[in-house]
Length: 145
Image (cartoon, rainbow, N blue to C red; front, side):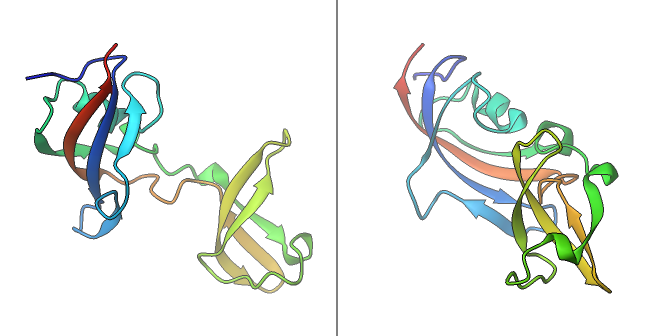
């Protein structure tokens, strides 16, 4: 069988689960995920598990937070004045907003609390701090290195 290796472009189907068994994402109802092994296009912990799989193999892998979206960083949680956010935006916990970092780069933040003219926003990835479980199947090696 053909084995995936660093530099190969592969196609996988996956289902992503949290530790409690709830599903956070899946490619099963859409096109498979295509990426190059070793190019850093997906989270490192999943990429390393695909390396060495054979076409047709399926496996369940647990990816620790450090090899997924990292640990939750409390420094990425800030309180800002409600007046800094356009008034036409309905702010409730869970609202995702596009913002600019200190150096002007775009970033996505999540509203976690709205109270007394102050909005708490979190710039951590929503899955930061969580170990992730993936059911992954290697469908094809599109281009071998």
